[in-house]
Structure formats: C-alpha cells, structure tokens
Image (cartoon, rainbow, N blue to C red; front, side, top):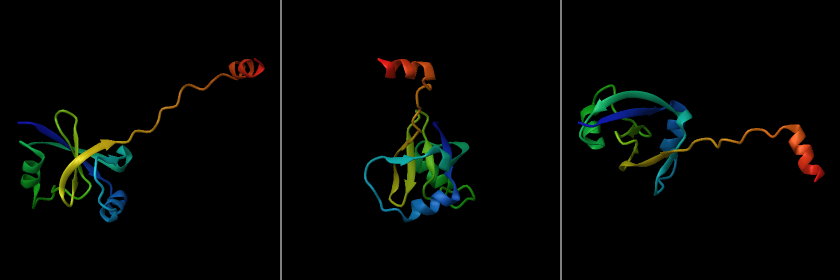
Length: 106
C-alpha cells in the first residue's frame, strides 16, 4: 500500500488560504508555510482523507499530501488538486571585485 507524507500548513498561511479565491491549475505552495508531518499508508489520497476524518489528525484546508512518487495534492474545499512547491531562486556565486573591474575596463 502506498505511503503518503502529510505536510501541515501553518496557522497564518491557513487563514490566507481559506479566504483566497479558488484558482484552476496547480497550486503553488511555499515550503516555509508548511510543517512536515507523519507518513500514512492508504490506497489513495481520498482513502487517507476518509481514514483520518473525525480524528485529531484529520486533514484541514491547505494541507498537502505527498505521494510515494513525489506528487503533491493539496486539500481544498472541492477535494484534492495538484500542487507544486515554489522554491526560492538560487543566485550564482558572487563575482569577485577584480573580475568586475576587468569586465568594466574592456
């Protein structure tokens, strides 16, 4: 049976998520807004939702399930939809001052 990792959305971003307009397409999520949680075994994301429903671990709006293949599904009012992590852009290594001066002199 597949294992799903639960990523719980933090309280402040959850309130923003709750009141945001529904959008189509993949939801872009920032890893800093989530806390990694437990792993659960279930046949699908909906099966896991059903198992956790009514328990203290129940899924809440904005929570993300990461599937065994790395796909992300975010829990919304309409069910589960595709999600993607938005990672910060990695800047290149700083240019040493001498290299900058040489480039400007040319």
